Length: 182
Length: 151
Image (cartoon, rainbow over all chains, first blue to last red; front, top):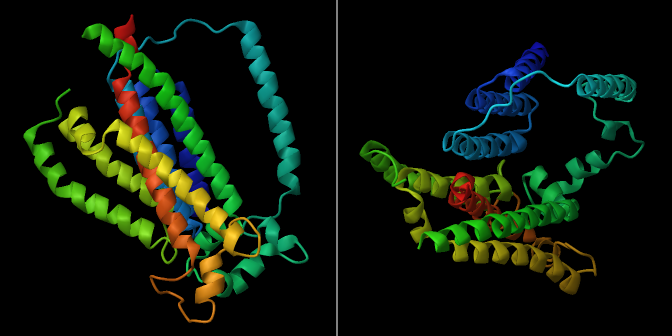
């Protein structure tokens, strides 16, 4: 139990350093530390599927971010913040904090998911009948690709659309640059 | 931007095959062991990103060009939707119906075997192709894009 709190503290400290540090590269490295902490957390929560995905995406995302950071010199934002902006953000954070306290009180205890509170919990059906009905030994795969395949289709569509957008927007400019250089 | 030193190039040329094989293993065994289409696809993309970082962008584009990557991306997405529509056609008129498992594999004891679970491994392969090529496309497109040169 204490390992979760240690990891959570590590993640929170990493997030604060990532926001407060002035060097952009060290902020990126702090974000990587947050991701690896989260993947360790998933591993200790006995969710190896999510831990593998988290660690792999973290590595690739870090490569993209570091490549984007290192390749060019960046302008740093300096100077004092506006008084009005600071007041507005403090008020918003305070409201979200109060709402979070109210919401977190209604959540079930740590380790007892909300699914198990229902009279006929869906997770019980997945665990007891999943292997028979879908034939997949990995129950996570049977949930995300059979019972809840609609969600996976939506996820794949989101990825597809974002890649199309990135390709269209970024390639057009780079092609124009290529033509100009020729 | 013609890649890194000879040490990095040598190590990368040994390791790239192992990373690629590991990605294929994660995708194909997704219905038996932790992992699956998404994680395996990211590992497959990672092997190409390693090529691109070590040997430069032109070398990676010779192996998998921008046009082929976007074509494979579309093929993966269409394959996934085709599996869902086959369930609609052959099954009990429901989207994503696991028709192979229910029709052909339900009576046999295929638990923990490689060929089991009907459409789940096929969906894993489709998602693996899709994720691998689309993440490779992201890196390729972002490395082609240089905002400073436009100024």
